[in-house]
Amino acid sequence: MRLGLVLGEAASGLRRNISMVISVVLVTFISLTFVGTAILLQQQIGQMKGYWYDRAQVTVSLCTATDSTGTCAQEEATDAQKDQVEAQLKSATLTPYIERYEFENHEQAYKNFQESFKGSSFVEFASPEFLPESFRVKLKDPTQAAVLVESLSGIAGVQSVKDERAYLDPILNMLNVASYAAIGLAALMLIAAALLIATTIRLSAFSRRREIGIMRLVGASNRFIQTPFILEGVFASLIGSLLAGGAVVAIVHFFVRGYLVKSVGATTGLVGVDDALIVVPILVAIGGVLAAGSAGVAISRYLKV
Amino acid sequence: MIRFDTVTKSYPRNPRPALNAVSMEILKGEFVFLVGASGSGKSSFLRLVLKEEKPSKGQIHVLGQQLGTLSSRKVPYFRRNLGVVFQDFRLLPQKTVFDNVAFSLQVIGKSRGFIQEAVPDVLKMVGLAGKSNRFPHELSGGEQQRVAIARAIVNKPAILLADEPTGNLDPATSAGIMTLLERINLGGTTVIMATHDVGIVDQMKRRVIELTDGRIVRDERQGGYQTQAVPIQGFGLAGAQGAGTPGTPATGTPSIGTGVNGTEGVSA
Image (cartoon, each protein chain N blue to C red):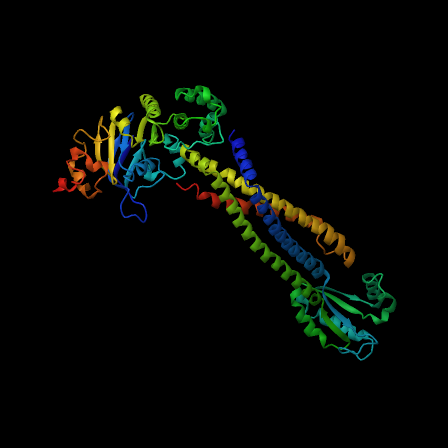
C-alpha cells in the first residue's frame, strides 16, 4: 500500500515535470558517457601496458655488415663480441635488474619481421642479413631500462641499446591526457547534472507543496515525504546512465572492435566489449548515487522542522 | 496536556517578540478560545504547539513530551496526535472528499482496510455522509471546512488546533462548525481555537485566553470575547504590558482598567 503510494507519487511527479526530466536524462547521459570513455581509456592504457611491458624489453641490437652507427664499422658482430655482451648481461651488476633474456639470430629476426609486416611491401625488400641479431632482455622493473642502456651501449659490436618502452610512452601519455580531459569534462557535466537534478526536484516539490504541507501536518515521516522525490531523480538519471552505458558499449563494439581493429590490424591490446560491459554498472551506480544525493539535498529544505 | 513555561518566541529581524514569557496550562478535554488582535501571537502559539517553530526561550510540554528534546525524526510521530484546521481549509483540489481524508491516513501508513472503515465514519460524523465523491470545488465553504475537520480528526488526535476555522464562513455556517467542534470536544478531544469571531466566543462561554503583543492579558473560564470578569492572570502582567499599542481590543477591556487611550492608567 505504502509502496504503491510512493511509486504513484513519483510517477505523477515525472509526468508533471516531463521536460525537466528529459533534460536530466540527457545531461546524465552525456556526462556519464564521458565518464565511461575515460574509464575505457584508462583500461586501454592498462591493457597496453600489460601487453607491451610484458614483451617490450630492452633490445640490444648487434652490428650487421651494413651498419656504421654505434660501435659498428660495417662489420658483422663477432662471436667474441656476442659473448662479451652476454657476459655483461650475466654479470653481478646487471643480473638483479634482469628477469630473463634471449638471443635472436638473423633467421628469427627475419621471421618476426615478416610476421609483423605481413602484407606490406617492406617484406620484399628485407633479407635476413639486414636485420640485426639482438639480445632481447626482459627487466624485472621496466622503469630501470636506463641502467642497461648505459652499461651496454659502449661495448664493441653493439649497434644500439633501445628501451622499447620509449616507443610506447608517447602513445600511453596521449591516451592518459585524453582520459584526463574526458574526466575533466565529465566532472563539469556531472556538476551540471547534479544541479539540474536538484532544480528539477525543487520544482517538483514546489508544484506539490500543498501535499507536502498536509503530509507534514498530519505527521507523515520525512522518509515517506522525500522518497517519491528521490525516486523521481534517481529514475531520470538511471535512464541517462543506461543510455550512457549503451553508448559506451556501442563505441567499443562499432568503433574500437569494428573500425580500429580493422584499420590498425592489431587484435591484441585493444579494449573489448567485455571491458565495456564492466563499465556499465559503474556508470549506473554513479548516476544513481549522484541523483539520490542531489535530490535528497534539494528536498531536505522542504522537510526542515 | 499543554504547558508553556515562560515561553518567548522572537523572529529574526524583529525586535518585538511574537510571544513574550508566556506561561499557561491547558488540561485534557478543555475547549479554549485564543483571542487577540492580528499579530498578537495566536498563530505563533499554535505553531509552537505543533513544533513548527522552536521557542527562543522557555519550555513547552505537549502530551507529556518536552518539545525541546524531541528529535526532528520523532516530530512527525508526535504530530499524529494533533489535528489542525485552518481558515483556508487547505484541501487538495484534485482529490475527492474521501481521498482528501484518506490521504492523511495513507501517508502515515494506515492499512487500506482501516482507511475504508475510518473515513466513511468520520465523514458521517461531520455530516458529509453522502458527499464522499465530490471534489472540494463542488462544496460550499462550510462543507469544505467540515472535510478539513474530518481530515484533522480521522486519526483520533488528542488535541485539535483550529486557526480561525470560521474566518471565511458566514455566521450560520460558523455556528454549524462550532457545533461540530463542540461535539468533537465532548468526545474527549482538547480543542484550541484561535478566533476573531466575537459572537462565537461570547455564545460558547468557554475558557478564553487573550493575547496582546505576545503576552497573556487574560485567561478566563467561561469568558467572552471581551471580558466581563476579573482576569485570572493579574494586573501586574497586564500593567507591565502597558506599553502596548493603544487601540487594540485588549486595551479596551474595562476590567484591566484602561480606556481605549488610557493604557498608562494601570501602571500609574
